[in-house]
Length: 88
Image 1 (cartoon, rainbow, N blue to C red):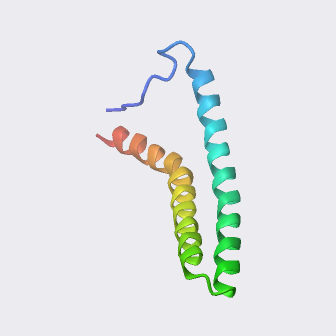
Image 2 (image 1 turned 135 degrees about the horizontal axis):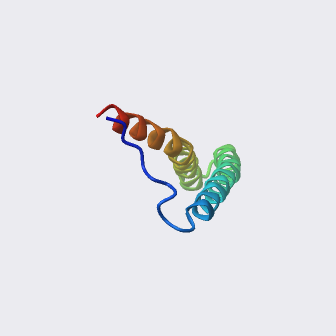
Image 3 (image 1 turned 180 degrees about the vertical axis):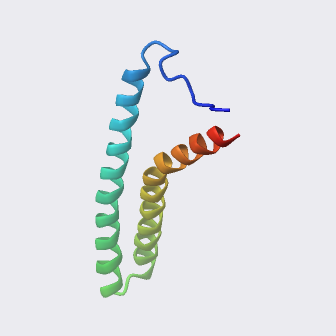
């Protein structure tokens, strides 16, 4: 049995794919920029002995890494689910 979603069944699906692709790129760019900012804050705060700001910078780095991993892995996960659906 070959199960595959009918992407042409809804009007405007091509525009939706373009919007999703643009949003994915936007999320990845913002995550990388915020990763840089958080790493700078973490490093500067640690070197000046401000542990509260260093902890917030470290949390920012972890959140940005998580967001980038989730956004980057979303397409891979969706392709895996589609492949899994074809095997049923």
